[in-house]
Image: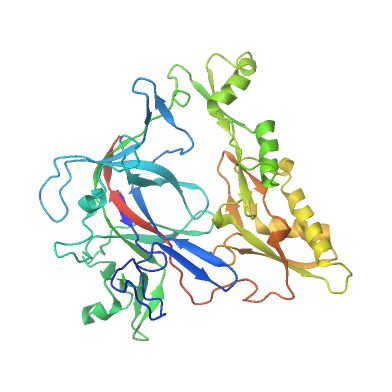
Length: 462
């Protein structure tokens, strides 16, 4: 199992330059960062994300919308990761003699848009839900990211290797940081000034903690080059743990039933309410009905026609909003439109035609649960519906950390279906397709504001 922490999305948190007024952006002690372009403010919040990963043995399931209530204790039952007491304290051959409990708080999505069942997001355990965690030092006790002198221990890092997913996108997964010759695949240093002559080997990787960047040595050119083949996070691997998962009564499988049937349901009430919310007619985002509600609505009718050995599992369908302000930040986008100058049409009329075509493309009848969205299909449909007024259309992500092309393919989970959230405010008329109009970043590197911490273990107990 891997436990990872990345204290970095814009830069490493540090109090060394706290209070610096040189106007050189050297103060990295901020938790809230306000930047202005003289018209608007951009607010960035520094966060810390703890990630637990099972390399081989365990796959996780977690639904943050489903709360499991224990009627005997009148409490909410939470999923847990227990770091077992049989683990040695790091760098010391001494057992903990007590379990370290982590609360599971969220599932993690891979680069392909699907839930990565190998990873789970953790948080500090709060037994009585009073808003105060039981022990705020459990990561330090587990991983020991700093040594006795208070300095960062560069031996306690987890390495993730880049790989290509089945959809052609790239993501990172755990790899044991040791080559066949016994040397480290990636050597972690405080900065590149600490590179020794022994590391000047072709293909050698070095991770600079201060910069949060990975470098690869090119022997032919005798220089270090920026690389994205690996990522490094503070953490620990080879942890022995116990995964505690609590299922509600509706999700438990009756061993007497031999034929399980999954039924995915999109109710008309949820569909109408959600579309009203997209239009701003209601303030709060509607939630799909629960599994129990679907069972109450449908079971009386379906139980009369199903076989005695059949067990129907009801799955509520939820909408996945694309492009507009109602979508999650990573799916928000701007459509750049190039109109045909030889045709007489106003900007507003062209935007209206394009938006109407996009809404037609996302008509409910055109989609099934768990489908994938391909921008090339949307382009072909919109161009056909708006000809001859539109010359070209491109999609540009709004999130700064996403590059042009990131939204060309989007996948949905089995219980999700796409819906368009774009409005005319998300459409922009441009004269030509240029690097600046696409917000493309050339030879630049961005880091994440959300920090991560990792634990990896080879074996676990269920």
